[in-house]
Image (cartoon, rainbow, N blue to C red; front, side, top):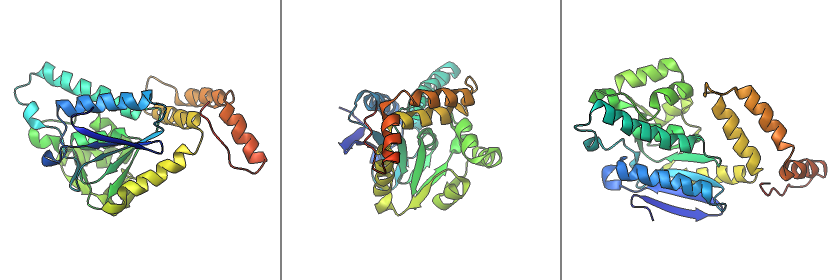
Length: 258
């Protein structure tokens, strides 16, 4: 179905693996098209409860964009390219189901931007993060300047953006860019374990957590108002009634996503 992705669905967890290992999984036009289709599949398929996004091999999550596709572009064409990338990455960020990036190696340029568009990140011990676009006379174009500041603060973000330098996994953990650092062989198991915990909760509440948290950085929205409305909406769900009843009856809730 996908030219550049491997996908599998097991126990509600959909794993998307970017599969261009000879290019360290660099983002080209086809990868972007496939990622766009994949995130639509995630939203459309009720059997999918959560997503792990990773790269094939042990060296690269996504080592950047395919720079050969940048050569000869005009200013307008460059903007169109970035606009399309931003639109796709927004779909990951605003996905109604939890998306974890399992960063198994280099996450550079567009790869770092893609990882940051996921709801949170887990890194293998060999992972490296960076936005080296200034080395090409460019800046990040898929949302990297915005999300990096949001995640690690302006000072640290600007240092990475302006030096084009890389940080290792322990530094990314210290900066708050990733939630956990684990050995490479434990990466997918760690992501799976976290998602199993998350998808055992009420799906509609999880979705509203994502919406409300994203509203913090959306200047077109009042995050407190969004939280208030989402909180109220939860009272109309069967899951809230089940959750409250289960708590009072000292039993495990059985959520159905309604």
